[in-house]
Length: 194
Image (tube, rainbow, N blue to C red; front, side):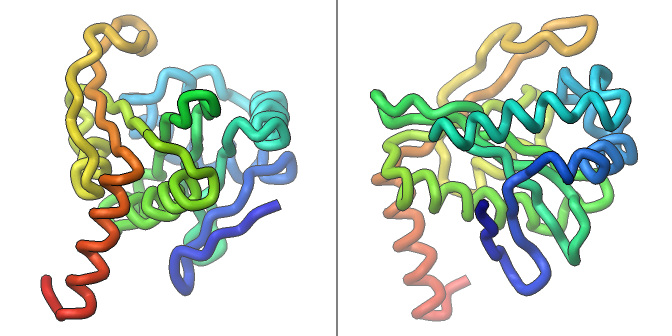
């Protein structure tokens, strides 16, 4: 399938059925951390619960509607990033991600998101990608802010989270904005800017 290098010890790979145990283990180890923002965590109680989900993800990939990729650091699965679905007519998609608690704050998700944006805008030639985060999930919001996304607004009661609705904030990035952002970063590297 695919594998995308993010650095010497960091890469993305398509999640396949043989990754079910590893996926269960990483979610289970960070259950309390992930549960604060992800409504599906409590439903994933056993390795077997991941089998139909992974099959659906593989079908999504086979149908050309996006992908779900594992994020591996030093050979260990530390998170997942992927596209919820691709709207080919309007050339847009939405991006979701999560990271094991032990690996937050290391720049891993920023690198993973940059790689997925390159796929979205270069390979798939899409025009728009959006990210929604919990209103008070500041760690998650830091990713689109860092990568030049624009704040679009608040989706009130945007998601049911176990026993209550919570608001989501929405960010978007257009292909032309991404190209400007990448060009700006390349200029910084060439000129030694910080």
